[in-house]
Length: 451
Image 1 (spheres, helix red, strand yellow):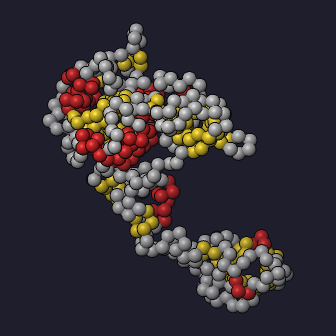
Image 2 (cartoon, rainbow, N blue to C red):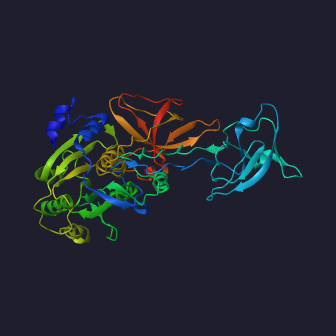
Image 3 (cartoon, rainbow, N blue to C red):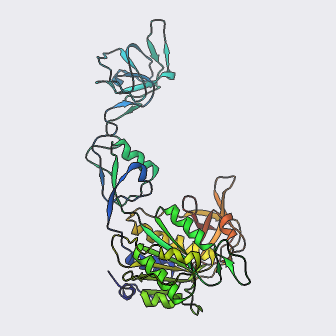
């Protein structure tokens, strides 16, 4: 396991006070390792889990050639271009029950969708493309089908003995159906990741507390909860931790002993008049960054030690939750990865989406590439200084001509949480990019399915 200093030495041009967004991502790729523990998971519990072992198909899907639709099955070599074909119906094949018999030249078999194709038959004509005479014979109009049409081949979806799903795959609803189609009841998945989080600061109010001058209600705790829940991790909520050394130490040690990763919000800026930075340094191997990005410039990343935890000061109902976890340790006791995020609500969400979410997916064992950024045409001018990455809240819509267009939500202040509700994506203006003119194409990170 490499230290912060060792990883920093590997990165060209590493400067903790002037990191680009790309350098942050490269650093986290080196820092984060997947959890090793695995478990057998039933299909109904497997959604959002990550495969720890390849799923090898024990059978072919479909297991036999079958009809892709209702119609008539026959040997396609009887078709002659430009000529109709008349056939005598000799029976009916139903799905789930193989038809027994032989079909000769000039004959066909009425067949239902999914029914097994008898030996020698390779083509199905849809019922609506035929006419039936008084003697029950069916006639195909000229050129309505070609040999081999409307037949599903054995193993065309999955072939027996081949890998159906690869290790590192994040299981989607479609993947669950695929596993079930193989007759498998369980899969081997990485253990569910455990992530603890808390907010810091004496100016933070918990819900239910009366308002007071200079204080604000904690929104970060709830947005982080939503982001983590969407990700499918096991969430450990430590509430609001007051800005005292004892309370912070208790919270960090409780989180590190029980969780694989810790997320905090607030207390990581240079010159903060609180104890969060000091405690991070004291308990772990932590780097404090100033990232060339907007919003979300300050961020702390590292590891927090998790051994020797003793419950300490509780600070009201929120902090008492930290002590309640002292006997519920994770299987591999030790440290946890730390992500110290800024305090402003939008900055918390942006840094989570840009850096923390990909890192947590890597910890979960996921090897699936990140969704590609979309390209959309800006409908307005956007001011941007080269030398930093900006994530502006945007509203993407489809223009009458079918192209994607995007506009900002207006005020881009890092405390304007309502703009994240209005937005359906982030306009990503890259490090070297300058001003955007109306009509310029920009990259967009869409929210749907993420937050």
